[in-house]
Length: 218
Image (cartoon, rainbow, N blue to C red):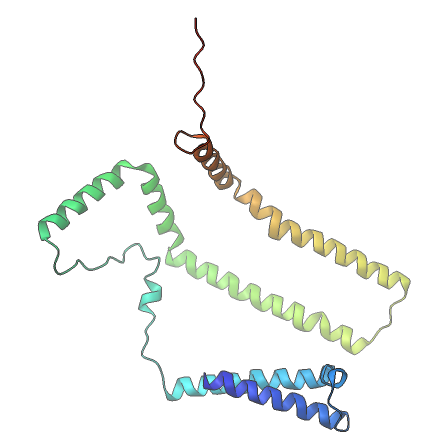
């Protein structure tokens, strides 16, 4: 809370002071919306808030070891039995649940899938892939593309502008395919299963829309 409030105050002060300094004390919608005043305000807010957040965390650390978050999807994490629960009743319930789970292929498949998803080796590999991908995107989108364009200060003609528009259109359709269409295709089996379940719920007996077919008289 301290860091967020201090960051807000620092950003507001830096924003207005920079505006007044650059534009001879004129503070209005036009001057405050300029690039350098907004940049100064954002940098001050992010910098002061981040520094204070780290400093207060080191000075007054919270006693939290993240065991709760690690055990959210852990199949091996078992809750402790209730103290006032009868022991024989608990054993009967466990045996019943165990027999039901053993007889249900969907439960077995779900358990196997969960264990595969929580495999430490696969999780570490996924973490490395995500980390390196994030660094690569940061390098490309923040440094390799914007900085050369900024320092070159090239004024494009009609051909350059046309190429820029074409690249933008290709990028838009490609990202749409990757972000929207490909996940739908990848989840087609699950979507079909959900669709069949919805149709069955709508037209099955007891749903309100189920109509008993009249038997033909011989």
